[in-house]
Length: 72
Image 1 (cartoon, rainbow, N blue to C red):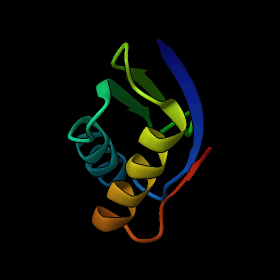
Image 2 (spheres, rainbow, N blue to C red):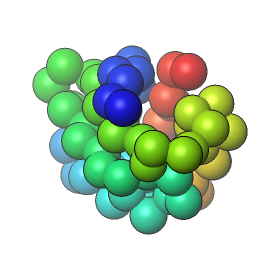
Image 3 (cartoon, helix red, strand yellow):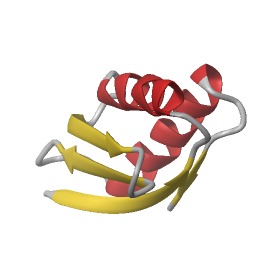
Image 4 (cartoon, rainbow, N blue to C red):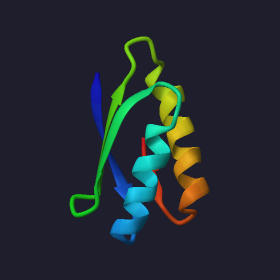
């Protein structure tokens, strides 16, 4: 299942860091971050609990870019 989330990030390089961090998160099958649209499209594994996975995605993104935000 895919779901789109709003994000707040200042530069394209930071958006790439967020995308890479999200892709490494357990439960995420794939992720695309669109800097221009300020959106993150996350594809979840079939058995994943979306809310807990997104909390992990948010934490992982904050580790690589502290001033970013993922709106869950």
